[in-house]
Length: 356
Image (cartoon, rainbow, N blue to C red; front, side, top):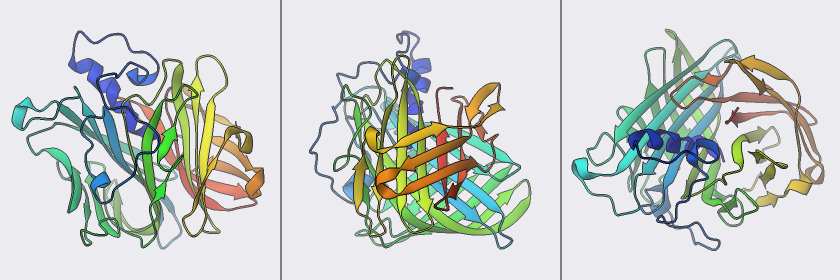
């Protein structure tokens, strides 16, 4: 979904108000959000407007991952995420009266190194934000911005982030259609009806420069954009998720996630995307997603190797983490890193695991 990772920001919000109630479910995302706009089926999407901010909703995020190689065939991963969270459902004021919090996460991963960084900002003062036309998302000097026309803002984008241990500057291009996840963009997260609006661009090709610990690399490879917004994406019984975005070598794409519960079986779903960009929702009975090997990461047992089977698509693969120690050691910690596929299909992708 990544739900992507985006929904983690609400854990931060509980620290902004000493009177906040005890969190229910993972990161407080099972708490009631009755004052905010609900997510309901049948909403028509409108582009480029939906690339921008959705006031009235509790949380949304712009999330990019890229699986990259250099000329020597060495593998790397890059993540860039911007989260917006509203402290109330009212229209947001300008200046310091603004009740929006922004959070940025950026990371790079190689087979031996994983570095992550974060930025925080208050809305209304220009330090962070998103505009739909021309498209630009930023927090401080971290930027995700269009280099294309207003009519096709996601055809050509620049992605930048910098920290003391790493930096990257990538150009992302695609002439492929956007993909609406779930049922025409209504992405359900539980049997009780929790959901988000969710679309992706899984067909980006990335190219640019990456620097890790003073070593510079020229890299290229596939990239994936996820966009989601919601007001209550989890139930109080849900403890976290395992989310995959996979680029198959035959040109098809696969998104899967399972929402884990304190009690009962996980909520499991996904999307199969063919080479033309046509999406098909996958239901739990059509998916086998089984954790295999674990690794001790930051004092936690993390499933870093998985078996995935989609019998209806003749897919039978194993995902192996490029770097099992891809722990995002931030104020809101989680695991996220690139994976490689083996089995009856090759490929690359990203895995995110929260709530462990």
